[in-house]
Image (cartoon, rainbow, N blue to C red):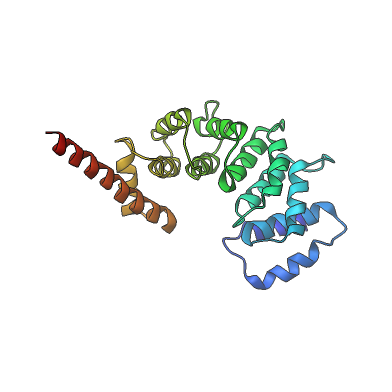
Length: 236
């Protein structure tokens, strides 16, 4: 039953017709079944507080029955929600001290995706992007870069880490990094070709929202260049 729920989670999309059925299973006596169903629901739909509570319990793992992969999936389901209440922030921030690095990373991404990130959250996001020990995957690094882009300001440390990530060998990481940097002012020269590649999307590799972001950021970068040129011309 857990495997069946996990198979549903892995589908590209789920019909709204399956939602009432899955929500009924949240009353199941088996804790691991409830957890797998809550993850599938959170992966595909905006969920009510009762489902969020199950996801939070999976992440906390107080009874020690959930593996790291389940806890990462639960945190990712939270990240995929349209909005999160600020009431979950203290709970999630406590998990940033967890012994599992990938759990900490997934929780930091969820926090950075929805809220102004604390120093501890930012530090984990930067560690994920830098990936010095080669322990984080493409999706984790790309999501961490996106979460930084969602912040209202970037520290100099964050900017330096993101600029280094523009040299990443993975295109998806480079794309999310360029978009994150472009949202926060002048983009390094190495970032412009990446945005142009996203916009052209010759191989259908990028999501529509990424192409929209690239188009908007390129427009803003051109405005910055134009203002600099005007200032220089005025100074002559």
